[in-house]
Each structure stands twice: as C-alpha cells, then as structure tokens.
Amino acid sequence: MFFVKCIVVAVALCSVSISAKDWWENEVFYQIYPRSFMDSDGDGVGDLQGIKSKLQHLKDAGINSTWLSPIFSSPMVDFGYDISDFRNIHHEFGTLKDFEELTAEAKRLGIKIILDFVPNHSSDKHEWFQLSANRTKGYEDYYVWVDAKGFDKDGKPIPPNNWVSNFGGSPWEWHEGRKQFYLHEFAVQQPDLNYRNPKVVQEMKDILVYWLDKGVYGFRVDAVPFLFEVEDLRDEPRSYDPKAEPTDYGYLVHTYTNHLPETYDMLYQWRAVLDNYTKSTDNVTRIMMTEANGEIKQQMLYYGNGTAEGAHFTFNFLLISDLNVNSTAHDFMFTINKWLSYLPLEYTSNWVLGNHDVHRVGSRYGAERIDGLNMLVMLLPGVGVSYNGDEIGMLDTFITWEQTHDPMALNAGPDRYQLFTRDPERTPFQWDDTLNAGFSTSKNGTWLPVNESYKTLNLKKQKADPESHYKLYQKLLELRKEKTIQDGDLVVKALSDHVLTMTRSLSGHDTFVFVFNLGEKNATINLECYSQLPLKSRLKVELKSVYATLPLGTILPISDFPIGPYEAYVLTSDISELRYRN
Ligand code: GLC
Ligand code: MG
Image (tube, rainbow, N blue to C red; front, side, top):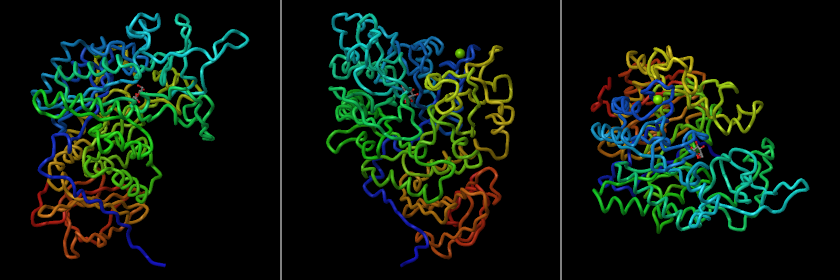
C-alpha cells in the first residue's frame, strides 16, 4: 500500500513549435446566436445590422474571432439550421449587402468572421428538395429516398427500418408526391442530403468557396457525424438506456448512422478546399471547426488520420458532456486529461463551455462557479470557445410550453419538453436595464422572452461595477497574450474532492497557478506538490472571481493559505516580475 498526496498528470506540449503558431491556435472564438444578439429594426429578432453595431463589444472584451450560427435563408423551423438557400441571407437578418457591411466593419476592427456550414440537410423548402421530390432530371438523388418496406392493413407505408431521429420519432417521412420515404436525422422539415451523390458533394464545396470569396475566415461545420448512413439501411441496436422512450434518439445505439468512414473522408475533402483557397489567395489560413459528438477516438479522427488533415479542431464538448454541478476536482482533472491524452501532439486543443444547444454554463454548474469556469477555459492550452452571454454570466431563462419554439421541445410535447428544450439558453443578450434589456426596441416583445434578471444582470452594469464577470473575462483575454499561457506546459492536480488546481509554466517566463474551490466549504491550499513552485516562492493574486475575498495583489505562501467557497484565483509565482492587472 502506498499513499499519494496528490495525483499528477503532466502534459507537455513538446511537439509544438512555438514560433510557428498560426493566427487561430490561441484564439478565443465567440459564438453569436444571431436571433438573440442585437435587433436593429425593432422586430424582436436579432439581425446582421444589430451584430455590426455590437462588434465593438467583442473588440472591447478582447475577442478577435466570432462564429455566427446560421444566417442563411430559412423557414426557421430549426432556427436557421434548416436552410432554403445556402447562398442568401435570411430576410429577418438582412440582405447580402448587410453581410458585406458586417464583414467590412469586422475587417476594420480586426475581427474574423466564421460562418456556420450546415451540410447534413437542407430545408424542405430548398429548391433542390422540390426538384428532387418531383424527380426532376439531375436532382433525383439529391436526398436519401427509399421505398416503403410494405404497407400496413390501412395502406400506410412502413418505414424501411427502426432508426430514430435526433428530434424524436422515425427519421423517415413519407412523401406523397414521390411515393417514397425521405430521411431526416433532425426535424421533418430538414431532409438529409445524399452525400453518395457526387453532384451534392460538388454543390456543397462550391458553397464553401462562395462564402470564402465573401471574406469569411472559415466554418463551424454542423452535425458532421450524420453525413452518411450505411447503404443497406440495417436496423440499429437498442441502447437499453432506462430513461429513453422508444421514440427518443437515445433509445438506439447509432452505429449505422454516425461517424461512418465516408464521413471522415468528406471532412478531409472540405479541408482540402479550404487549404487550396488559402494557398491560391492570401495565405491566411481558413479554418474549419467541427461539431461532432462521439467517443473520444472517433472525435480525434475529425482532426485527421495521420495522412489526411481534417478540422483544425473538433469541438471538445467534455466540459459539457462529462462534467456538471456534481463533478469533483478529480472528475475535472480526469476529464481535462482525457482530451489531452487522446489528442495527437501536433493538433491544437480547445475547450467549449457552452453553446446554443446546451443549458448555460451557470445553470449547469451553478452561478457561483461561472468565474472559475471562465478562468479554467481561458487558462487551458489552445483555443477557447465562448457562447454569447458567457462573458457576463447569463443564466437560463424559464420558458413555458406556450413560449416554446425549439422543434426538439415541441416534438417532445408539453409533459416532456423541459427535458429537451434549448430555448432557455437562447434568450436575448442582456445589454442594459432598458426595455428588452437593450436588445430590441420592440413594443410587442421579443422572439423569446428576455430573462427577468436583466435589470441587475447586464453588460452595462458589469462595465460600471468595480468587479464583474465581464471585467474578469476581459482580463482573462488579456492574460492569454502571456507567452506562458500560449505556449507553456500544463499540470493539473486535484488537491481534494473540491480543490482543483493547475499550473502553466514556460522556462524563462512567469508561472501561472489556478486554484478553484468547487465546494461550498472553506479549504486550505497546499501547493507544495508542484515541483515548479520552489518551497520558498511566494504567489501573488493576479485575478480573482468576483466574490472571492483575497484582494488582488495579495502575497501568499505556497502552502496553507485559505480559499473560500467557490472562490477561484489566478496567481503568479515570480513576484519579482509581477504585473498587477487592474
Ligand atoms: C446542430 C446544431 C443544432 C441543430 C442541429 C441540426 O447540432 O447545433 O442547433 O438543431 O445541428 O442542424
Ligand atoms: Mg430585427
């Protein structure tokens, strides 16, 4: 038997050539949900001119890159993820001219715009779908069509297999005109495109180039794992998840509809499109980030397979999927190292705290942990990803059944909608304490209600307050310019169930120490287990969570200092070279 005082896993980023870092490798990508960011014309729905008018906010916060959820023509069944024209702008958001103005303003401010590319499906209102449904020559196979397996005694067509849609129920919809089923992995109004058709493949590549020509710096690629399905349409096995009902996506294991080898290959082809574009224009890297939930090894393949390159990074959703309010410091340590353990050394890490599909970070982890989590994401190596509102600690909004818009929630019905709804995290940005939180001048309300907290929780107030989530966020972005944070090694240690710590260190530069008390009780910190911190060294409080009690500038020993419930600090170790950040 042996005793371990603290468990150590060190990840040295030794293969990264420090001088060779590209523009995106230490970037924070800020996700804008266009319907809810800023409304310029008072219709209660956000728009491109609204975004343009608020780009300065990104700049002020320290953000240089933003990815926009879909802005394209759409009937808005899935709020822009059902696209009826991949080359045009949705009318509530504006026009192509507005987009040009937006990119011009972004360029002026030095902000790069990344668009959402939604390749798996279109809207059923897309011209292609109409053409395909009536078997217009050349378009017959743009979608995944299949005959009925048979007809029941009432003459109702029987779907070809047992598959379940992400939004619940069978993903097969009978088309009366064509007398065939079409596949929809999401809403009925989102027919899956057929990637076994080379014409579809080419169309989608052309769309990438179309937007690159309009000045965007890359794409967030939506719902990647679903691009291909097995050709023989075999049944999928049961998951035996006791919570899943037969119509729930979780009822089956999606072996035959997710992460097929062809899917990875398509990703590698898109990467080649981007790389060719870069090479044939200005040599500025155009990036691809992919949304691909799955087993960790499946996820890593989206980066590349050793021969072909894929995404520059595939979203690391582990802080969403594997951790929550009940997670211990050991769980955090394990989860952080899980990603880094599987990530090939030549690739860039990334950390996603939230998005428009999951409850807000403070609602998942508890509002009192927001600052500690923002610190964690900003201090970990590689890319950080924020969802609009994270910088001010916005929380979920309670949405009644009557107010529900999300198709996933609507499909679940009034009794179960709360299990699925994504509306609570999509409510308008809280700019100030005026009408509609300053989001819109609409007198008839906003598309989703504004969170009642807006009078006290808003950007304007947080800019005025001496300390706030926003001010901390701003300082964290500033801190990311430090060489140590950009290139340094990482060591994560759980000092107890409640105390999570890590160091970032780089020879010749300051060492940064992060301490975070996840628990509701006081704790005493002893950092002697870090060999990078000499016993006699002292630490200085550089940054603190809003309610933390130790003032900025406090000098601490490396052992036996107190930390209150939920407090989080960034400390520096070399006091001779300390800067005191105000
Ligand atoms: C992605 C999007 C989500 C959308 C789905 C279907 O998961 O993030 O919002 O509903 O794809 O396009
Ligand atoms: Mg508007």
